[in-house]
Image 1: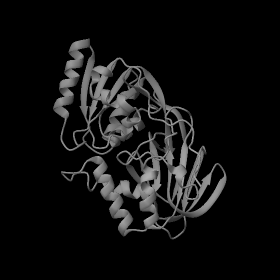
Image 2: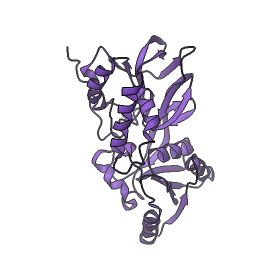
Image 3: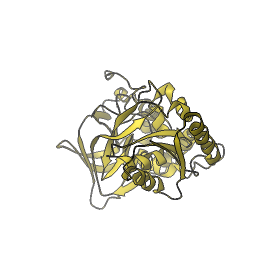
Amino acid sequence: MRHVFLINPQAGKRDRTARIRALADRLAAAHGLDCQCLLTDRPGGAEALSRALAEAGEPVRLYVCGGDGTVHEAANGLAGFSNAAMTVIPTGTGNDFLKNFGPDAAKFSDPENLWDGPEFPLDLIDCNGRLCLTIACSGIDARIADTVHRYGSLPLLSGRGSYLLSVAVNVLFKPIGRRWRVELDGEVLEDDFALVSVCNGRYYGGGSMPVPEARMDDGMLHTILVKNVPKRTFARLFPAYSAGDYWKFPGIARVVTARQVVITARPGEEDIVTCLDGESLRSREVHLHLADKQVNFFGPAGCSPNATAREGRRPAEV
């Protein structure tokens, strides 16, 4: 079994390469493991390295040392390979993926808690051929995520702070809604939407949790659709949306468990911005569906990717 530490030196606000190398050396010495460190050197590099490791055919455990973007790339590289499994050592700013593990998220910082941990498969979202671990969002939230990286390097802002600044800029100075055709397992809706987000995990945007019922291994996706609303209304409802309390505005938000979701831009309208684990793409039509149990994951003993999931749905308030 190979243990490979895949390090993104650009993740977060400072380079943690030296620290990760020291952790890998300590792990190898303590347990006699075959440990190796590889650095990503370009966008897409983590995906290419992950796929090359998996295609080699030997058993490999991959420790992804970066933020959500690096995790996203590694999952795309390893998807479908039974000989490879991944985990995460967080070195990014938001690290939303690990929030799904609740209190156990802190244990992922030390590979001593990971190297012999249990392995389990996770579902993914297929979006126009790209794979997503947590949330594939289209609309105002995607446009916010697309611009949040501009603020991530500001010295006094956390991942959450960068996100909230991007929210303010996009909501105050740009229109919220777009006219789309949305197909949900054959049901067709044509309306002005603020956002349409397909959820496999529960967190994005520095900690927003739109659908707390979403689970990462249940063979199901939850899609939340939010109709266009005036900016003042959006500002009032956003905290509830971010907290997963969509049930508080039933006339505006709807959650469905469709297996196939297609979002189409009207002729003459701008391209749809979609963010997958924070990584952006633009298209005229967005096709989303479940990619069942496509990537193997390992973590601390007793951990669960559904640790913070909510049971059932709250009744709508009148």
